[in-house]
Amino acid sequence: MSENRKHIRLGFSIWATGYHPAGWRLPEARVDGTFDPRFLTRMAQLSERGKLDFFFIGDRVVGLPETQAEHPNLVLRPEALTLASYVAAVTKKIGIVTTVNTTYSDPFNVARATATADHLSGGRLAFNIVTGRDPEAAANFGRSEHWGTDHRFDNAVEYIEIVKRLWDSWEDDALVGDKASGLFINPEAVHRINYKGDHYSVAGPLNIARPPQGQIPLLTAGASERSKDFGARFADVRFGTALHLEPAKAYYADIKGRLAAYGRNPDDQSLVTGIAVYVGHTAREAHDKYREIQDLTVTNYDLGPLSGALGIDLTAYRLDTPVSDIEELASPSTTARRIIDQAKGSFGTDRVTLRDVFLYFRRSGGGAEIVGDAKAIADRFEEWFQERAADGFILFPPYLPGTAELFVELVIPELQRRGLFRTEYEGKTFRDHFGLTRPANLYAQARSRQNSSEAA
Image (cartoon, rainbow, N blue to C red; front, side):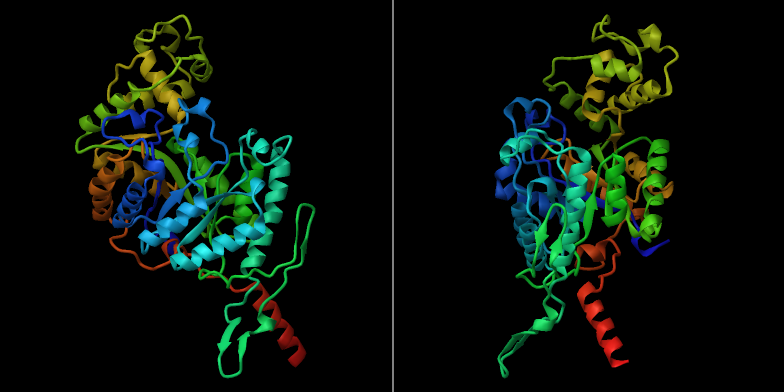
């Protein structure tokens, strides 16, 4: 087994009001955690106490009140780089993933901010690249329209090329600090990048020393062909979708198979799958909590999307109709059976109603979620890891506080007993956690080749 696949990778995604849109309505849940420093400190330190690989901070540049029933976390969303620096100050070893939208930001400013945060965290930062999917964002940045997919990715390629060159614009030994001679920096070791492309023109150099990790690790996600190839070219970690086992294995093989075109090996990149986890001391406790949250859902019960997924018109049926009484589903398609079986597994009963299936599908879109005790969670993680459906998981907490604490208390020890997860951090940086080597400086390499050529 390769170094970066010796145990399951685990990250925690901070959804302050809970990943489930009704999670904040639980009596024990917080509604103001998005901007409460004590709450955020607690979540970050809890993740570190569990020895998780990273604390993930998503970001969006649009927050509209009319979306609150579907996405309350997006109505209130802290700026990710600011929060990443705060998390760095209250933790010591856990990796910190910050999200940046390349369509609505500037590469020089972001290269400078991320390099600074990597220094302040002692080399624990990682950079999640998104190109933005909200058309409404354009109006927040003085644009008449949101760019299409190809335009956004053409822009992102240049953006990342610039950021990577700026991080390398200071060689590791550029800061001399020789008080006797008065030489502060070695000018030959600080470089203008002089980048000129279709979207950007950036001279450089950066005015912050090279990050401790050399190159800050990059993360990407997305289902389009452009996003997959972009990730194969640049990403150290790739986020996947919580599919079911066989589709997840196919997705894993597809993602890993694209790396060779860029001179990379399959294990050069980790695939970490996002998944909602409902865990309890017992399976019954977990299923009861799952139902409690579903019953708090605010929705108009539009059955159109579920009808399309199941392949039948459901509008004539009452919501309390048992699915077993719907004749058209007596011999369901593979997709329909998968959706119904997952709903049964989540509610913990074979007798689910149309309303139950609707509520499951509304949040998950038919993807996988895990509801059960620590053994059930660990069994699923182990199966996906051993079957190469995922290299790890990013945990989407359905509600907070509560679910994260239970995961650290119950699931982490079970994974450790199986030898599937660390008992202590092996290193200090994000690269250490993922078994990534520190890359050489491209300008230092070029200068070394030039000096060797001149000497010859």
